[in-house]
Length: 174
Image (cartoon, rainbow, N blue to C red; front, side):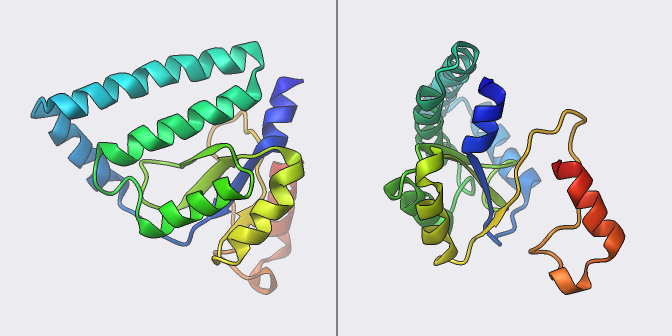
């Protein structure tokens, strides 16, 4: 079904860049409280895109979903300092040039993980291009039980992982 297809088209990369989500969200809150018209207009557009994104998923129009994800990226990166940075912008540009349709930085932004929507036939090209920038692709599956914390490369080398860690990863990814 559509969910399986969507799962196959998502690619998750660890950027190696840490960020302070609470700081970014605080900046965003302050900008909203100031009532900056440009910020408020951008937030309205992001809200409208969220509705369109939901509708595209409900209709199973997955490539349009990928395009909307890109439009959302363009809005969010202009919203507040820290949502992205030059390195992540470069990674995203390279991913798009190689076939990804859209993406987002997971969490509040500024680093951590880059989640991309990419047709299956373009994924090897995107993965190779991003590996040259030092990004590591991580396994991605939808998780119905909420966030699951797993010990997984690149935080720990494969050699240092214990057998129970590998089992935990396997069970979570099956």
